[in-house]
Length: 244
Length: 240
Image 1 (cartoon, each protein chain N blue to C red):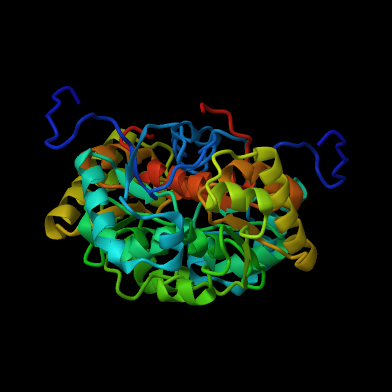
Image 2: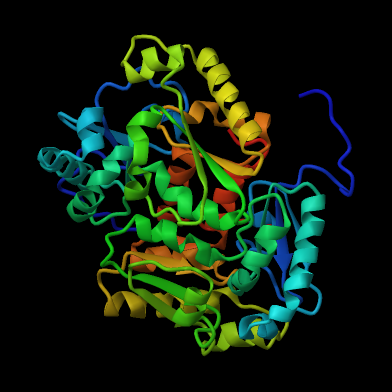
C-alpha cells in the first residue's frame, strides 16, 4: 500500500482496537482490559459518559446514544474493532455494530459457544465473574450459550480485596490477595464439579489471574484478552516467514 | 514449578498443540497448518492413516475411530489442545471431543459463531473452501454450525493451480499463482456483496494467502491459524 490517504476524522493513526470504558471499576492492573500494556498492539480508550455498572447491566435505553457516540468516535480514529471493559456493554451490541461498521466484540461471554463446542458434551464450563448476583440470569441474553452446555458460575463479590478495589471502585488493588481468593474459588468449583473442562474469566479485571489459574487447574482459561487478541489478529494479517 | 514428573506415553515434552493430518503428501509452505513454522509455539502432528483428501471431503464416518486413535496418541504426548489440517474433519469433532480431556477444534469452521457474534446479523461472511461441492449449508447444519449471518461459500476446486497442486498432488505448488486465484475469488465476493463482514478461509492450505485476501477486501480474515493461535492462548502452558 504505497499511497496513504489522509483520514480526515482521525487525529492520529495506528490504533488497532478501540475500547469502550465503563465508569468506576477501580485500579487497572497489568492484564486488565483498561490497562494499555495488556496488549501487544496499541489500543484506544473512550470512556462512555454516564455508563455506570447499574445502567449497563439494565441495558438502560437512555444510555444508547452515548455508547453509539463513543463507538462512532473510535471508528473515526481508524480502529479495526471495538471491545469494552464490561460484558454488559453487550446490551448495546446492535447499536455499536450499527454506529461502526467494524467487528464488535463487547463481551467475553461471546466465547462460550466456541468453548462449549471444543469440549465433550458432559464437560461443564466454569465462569468466574466479578459479581455473580449482577450477572444473575442474564448470561443467556448476553451470549448464545448452547442449551446442553452446563455452566458453573461463581462470583468474587464476597472477596474483600476484590470487592473494595473493583466493585466499590477503590483506590488500591492488591493483586496477590485477589489471586489467592480467585484460586480458592476455582478449587471449590473443580472439587464440586469434577467434569469442569475449561474456565472463562468473564470480568475485564480478571485476566491478570489467568496464568495462575491455568497452572493451578491445568485447564484452558479464556478471558477478555484471548477474545480481543483473536479478533485483532484477524484484522491485521501479516505475511508469513518460516521454514520449508 | 521445580518438580517435573514423567508423562507416561510422551516421547517428548512441551508440545502445545496436536494436529491431526490427512494422509497426503503436499507442499506445506510457511503459513500452512502442516508447516510447523506457522506457529509461535511447538506443535506435533499425527496422520490419520488412509484418510486421503478426497475421502475426507466426500464424508468418511468409517474413519472416526482412526481419528480418535490419532487424537488419543496426541493427547498422550501432553498436548494442550487438538486441531487438524482439514476443515472437513468437522465430521469427527463429536467423536474426538468425547474421547480426550483437552479442548478439540478440528475445523476452522468452528470459528463461525465467534465471527458472527462480532458482526451485525445482516453482514455476510464468505467461506473460501477447497471444494464448495462438499462444503454445503447442509454439511454445516448437520455438524451443529448455525449462525444468523448469510454464509457465502466459494470453492477453489476450479482454480487450475490450486486444483493441480492440492487435489491432483502434482508435487509442486506455485504460491504466487494461488495468491492470484484466491484473491480473484474474494474480490468477486466483495464486488457482489459490498457489505461483506469477514472472510473465513476454511482450507488449511489457505492461511499463507490471508494477508493478500485482507489487502484485497479490507475485512477481517479468519483461518485455521487464527483458531489454533486462539486455542493455544487459552490452553497453552506458558502463555500469560
